[in-house]
Length: 102
Image (cartoon, rainbow, N blue to C red):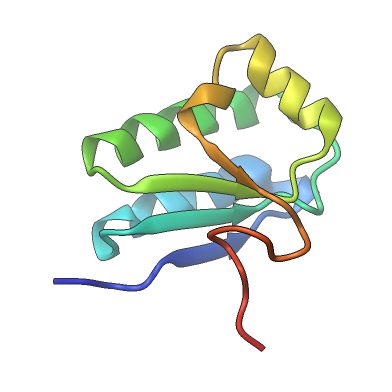
């Protein structure tokens, strides 16, 4: 059964709960889950743990996890904890797999 990509906007004040909610949506898709990080300026340890769990669950279901609009500081944090390689990245402008239809 082919389904469309799931897209979720992540709020700076609720990063971990938003990522956990996205993890719950992995069962409803077989393509990709896009997390919009354009409103996130930094990540804490709870967010890192949630991203690790999300990446593990996505890999187990063969779903492509995409982070859109990630700023340089967040990317560096993900790279430092060796999480960056587990995600695809898309720009805020709509280039790439996460382009929104208007």
